[in-house]
Length: 267
Length: 246
Image (cartoon, rainbow over all chains, first blue to last red; front, side, top):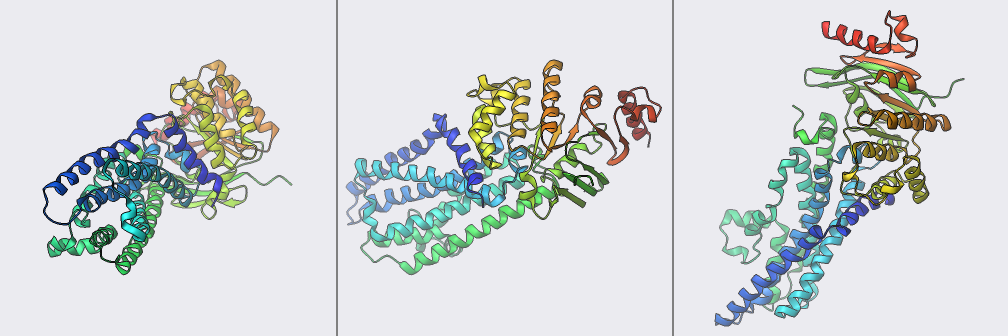
């Protein structure tokens, strides 16, 4: 793997972000909007609820952790779509660049952009609503790791879908986190779901994170075994997503789709 | 003993379903040689170039670049290759310098800053260094694509209608620049164009492609006379009409 080639992919996105407030703005604004909306909602729920439950770490924390996953996924897909929007595939792929280097580059971009978003959400939630991520204790690290791996896996899978189906598939990509969230038990225990949804939840790494988060908030020990299972699942999905991307890329090379990407199909 | 070719294409074929776009063509490009790949629209020129660029997998045949098999060692084979095509402009949302830096890093160019400075000067782009590529005129964008194509001092240069969108004066300068680059190194060029004057001026040898097959090959200065045509343009038209009649 060439560091120079991976660096080129990262540098290209850095150049775009540096000169483009419209790309930087969404890294902050959606996070801030979610914090405001859910922060006030949790404050209201705390004021009307007679239970001992503190909704700030349970609900607002859940929103922020889900936002983190979404930001990671979008970090990958946005970097890919920059090449879609500028019709750059021929220039990019008719070079010594390997697909593994391209994927590594766009994943590194996602690491950078999601860390910025995470920092913003942690600081804003702390000062606006008193939410400290330290509430989650040592479990915070596996929470973030599982969500990060899942976000990367979703992002890579989404790029594979887009590479296969063409530029118009963009509208299929953006709602993916929204579609998954009811199954992942972001705001409620998985046990309230019907059996068929619970079966799907068991396959989703984030469901282990949110179950663990609620356990920690309730004063129970972190479910390390379940988190390890979630991590293993996320890792497996990441490997599968990368293999899917490579397979789609090979198919696109065979069919000529890379050179005629805007046509969406070569038939 | 002659130097090994920078490009050797052996029985290359590509089918899209039942359509045979390229039908087992074989040719080579020697170091320091400019080979014109000619033919009417749909003859298979761009399909051939896309296969050599590694963005389209051949149905059959073999492509060897500087002794390296493209199918087996894609990255190594393409590291000494570059291209410019009128249908592949560089990202318009990056500046001229940013584009050259990004692609210079992809090609792992040593002394990249100096190389960029030299190419900006050579292609008269220095004053556009910090201009977004998307706002350049089509001629300036062509010069930028050619500067990108020269970044890694390629041993094999693929040019698909490189002067299609620029004025005759700029086209002449660009032809001279490419010819100079070829003479100064050991670069081989595969050049497609519909401008027969240009082909005659720059190409050492031409290949006429028609319906996916090479139907004629030779020196562009003598080939018309050998086939009863007055000019290369006339020969092109004859070949295209024969292809249609088949």
